[in-house]
Image 1 (cartoon, rainbow, N blue to C red):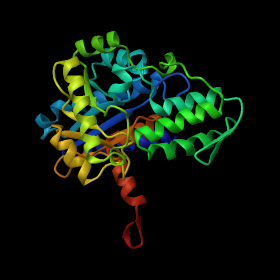
Image 2 (cartoon, rainbow, N blue to C red):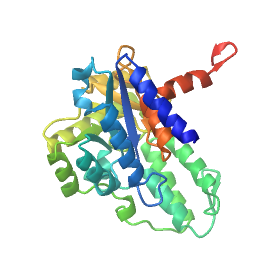
Image 3 (cartoon, rainbow, N blue to C red):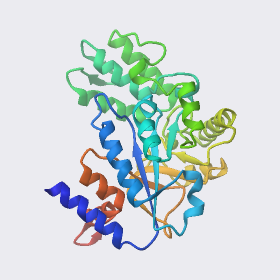
Image 4 (cartoon, one colour):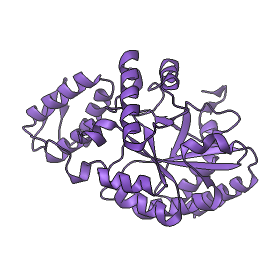
Length: 318
């Protein structure tokens, strides 16, 4: 009943809202052990198709007067995007955008956090690395390690992961196995040729922007752009900050993103984007949810009201 009320409230809010707003939906893994399954994606996409004009990021400048605009972004570009999301998008006619690190796609390298997940699932005993004890019986210990690694530059991060695997007595496959791989070259070409798929820049190594010094961040953006331009025939017009939470981007990184030629940049800050007040280089996003009513609520913009209320105390916003 509560979920139905959420959905009804979201639809009423959409109908009553007058000011133009952009909702950016994001997904990561779909299917398998993920909480988000293809049925949840299909239900969300049909909701978007009913109530929103769904576009690619490259079309955002032409929709300033649209009351309800939506963009769908898929972070990292695992094979899930081709297996589970693209068929639904093609059936419904929903444009989607893939945010893919180029080391992952072009060089078939592991995403560093996937390697720690693989290690957790295959470890048979506990070990210590960086002063942190990790135990396969305690998934939280690996989550703590991942939080630590997020704040490490690529070289130090990779060395720590090598040490982790050594201490756990594990040998990872050189390339990610099927459950962890990126979309293949042929799969991505098929998706791009459909006209429904657009590429979003997501760096080379999936390192948090503020962890990198200015020169290193510029190099990652330049290399990523050049590789995608060579593959797609044009560079991406939009960028997705790795991790993308507050503190993962700032004024310095925003200026670097602008100089790299990006017109839009997506964060992981929860919310929708009122067109008249949004910063195009710090766009908020909302996640697809397995509960339909929650999915409707975040897409509609009601989540903005909820976040405002939750962040306010007796003395105003916290």
